[in-house]
Image (cartoon, rainbow, N blue to C red):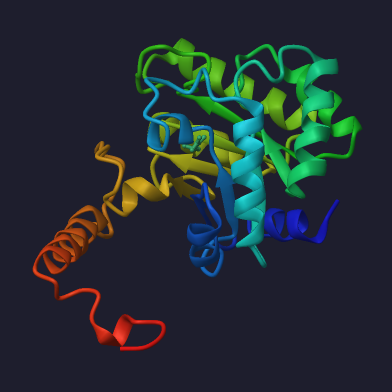
Length: 260
Ligand code: KIV
């Protein structure tokens, strides 16, 4: 097990784990200073590419963004999402996880659970690639958003699913939009850290989509806290730039590279 993974595991029950998404080097180098984990999420499909869901983002696109993100990372654990269709069976999953690992030099891959694909985790682990699980609202397998675990039967299923993911060898697990009581029970039951998104403060750590917390994505559900309004800041800057060109304020002599 790598030192970086050991460090994440050691935080369980001691110190909260901080994670955010990144799709490019420029953002990665900022968040790397304050995050334990950086995820190249397939949420880039909606957030960057304006797709209606995450189903069509390709493995190659995820790899290209991860190569960029890697360049901005010095200390955090780099996790790369395996896109839908890239882990349909254990052989294909292992082959694609190895490809991601080799091309991006990431530290781990993440796969969404459909409550059946535990063998996929085992197979990727055979290649010594650390795997992060993901349960609850899993956009690759669910077409409609819903908070998971409200009914007793569903809560029990989520708890069983998380235990199977731990047993299969995952080093951590994302809990997306599960009820606080389910998040609490899973976090208490598992030895591996739980990372919540919309799943309460009972988790061992938290993750959010960076574009959402910066006010860039236009997607602000209740579980997202907006820490900045970059939309407004960028718009102001672009407006000023446009005005200065039209009024011939920019470029001026200070911006000339040569001569007068
Ligand atoms: O794709 C993503 O950004 C994710 C996080 C929301 C956990 O999977």
